[in-house]
Image 1 (cartoon, rainbow, N blue to C red):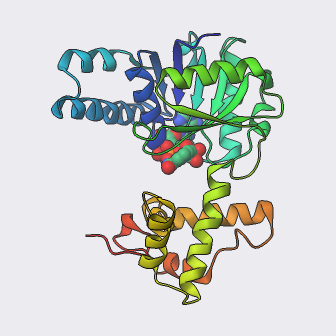
Image 2 (cartoon, rainbow, N blue to C red; image 1 turned 120 degrees about the horizontal axis):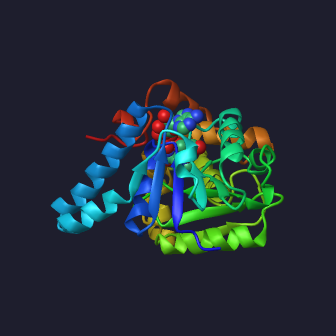
Image 3 (spheres, rainbow, N blue to C red; image 1 turned 90 degrees about the vertical axis):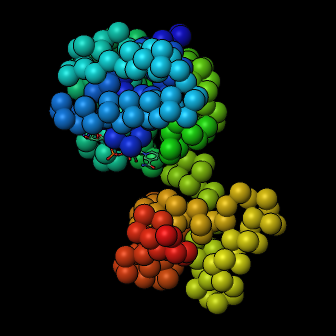
Length: 284
Ligand SMILES: NC(=O)c1ccc[n+]([C@@H]2O[C@H](COP(=O)([O-])OP(=O)(O)OC[C@H]3O[C@@H](n4cnc5c(N)ncnc54)[C@H](O)[C@@H]3O)[C@@H](O)[C@H]2O)c1
């Protein structure tokens, strides 16, 4: 099955980027949010970004207008029934996502594939509220969506091979780099591998083994990482990092995700990383 038309549900930080990416690749992209205000804000963000590319000389005016013409705001799912794929990007709340998929399942044709952009929730419990668990999948885009190429593609327990193939083909069409996650497992690949490294880096600083700057330099110069794990944590937000670690610790047990007291102190003191002006580093 070839995906030509997409519906994005939830036009916040991730959803608007996903919609822009899809429209830029030539796909008709329906966009939906809870109300007109939220929908308009999402469309304005897309317009600003696309026009920003015109200002930088990366697109001409006609190209920008063509891209924006592919974005179709809808006020209910009925208006987007032609979509071959729905990508959900509402708040990270399992009950809310299940409600959204229940509502979509009632309206969208049987053939439409459903995908959730959850960063950490399991896919199968969302698929289970629909009549199409074999046409249900996780697509974990990374932020900022228009820049980052990786999309983790997560199979639910009942996701079919056809669904996986169609979604991978779609992601290639929109210039992304899909990586299959074969099991619906906590942290998928990226957080499972990166979070223990970040955590160990924090413990290394906490125990006085080295400074944050030297831990990051060791990882950059020793392994050719473009950025050290602590600086990346500052960029993601230390509060978000703590939330992810706590969630993984609860789901997986053991010590590898056990947050360090230094991390908790930083967050409690308002040192949240780049967004607050200070984390492991100070930002102007
Ligand atoms: N922010 C990140 O870096 C990041 C990265 C990867 C994945 N994610 C995941 O993407 C999803 C969205 O995150 P975000 O950062 O874009 O959130 P956000 O808060 O920026 O946007 C969420 C949007 O969903 C809308 N919404 C809420 N309930 C809705 C409903 N019932 N129907 C339609 N729209 C609804 C809100 O109005 C809002 O516009 C989450 O599951 C999150 O975990 C986030």
